[in-house]
Length: 391
Image 1 (cartoon, rainbow, N blue to C red):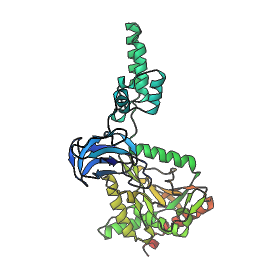
Image 2: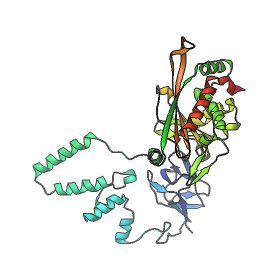
Image 3: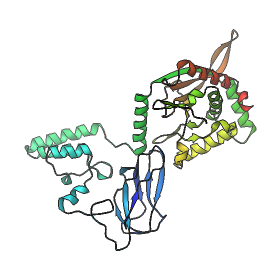
Image 4: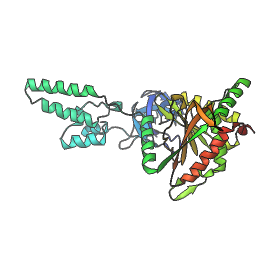
């Protein structure tokens, strides 16, 4: 019997995937376990293996198209086996039904075409994978109307449309940007964000990092040191490591630190699991390894899920304060800003010190302002006496 090749579910939060590249063509022989198609989610790229021996009889989803998890994307059949009618593994219908089935168009485009009694097969799609969009249908309607106008008017309208179209280019979001957009909108609209800022004297932290990097082969970043300090502060203030699910509070027993990594086309947050059990050196090595894998697009689904608290560092971009958006289902996120040298009054003396602001956004449904302030104060004390992290 024919066997469907389906879009796999690579993580708990994955709802759809995109076909990036077919490694086999229709009619080619495949073996069970052989890689046949590359797919991508909002965060990672992976390959799908053939679920059975046979021939790739039908490609149902073209390169560049996005489909829900578990949707059939191809069919494997035995040589000489005919595909039956009426399902994903069953192929052609007759006449207009066959024509209609393979016309790719958005729901809005289909509705607009139906309202104007337009045959979609006459329209060239400009969307992903040749999908017909609402704009394609509108353009077709406009061109039909122009066809009935005098030649001069037709040219004037065409010129005007060309000038308008030059002003802005419309491009579809890729999978990663679309998912970031959806998650950030959901977070901002559903979670009552509050952001508190605190200034920290990080002179001793700067000195500690310099000494550590001089004395050993491994090089520490400020993110590494702040991550270790956060683990200590979260142990003292565990509410910031909890989350809300419906009307219940989830008291996460482990500290799983998300470290935001900027990519050329988006953002990804790999997760250091069980950070409370790791030394500063272990934390630093794992953060470095995960960051490198993120930039090389080699993270596994397990490495980007399960976070309980996130750190995002914009200090290298000379940002002195910002409002980070919470990464659901977490309840708090720490924004790290630029380190400045500035005059500070200490015991009536003006001295030059290194200072930095920390920006904490938190879910006010779970975390009160005083609780968040206590966490920031504990974090400040740790960073101003960083040697305590090494004990």
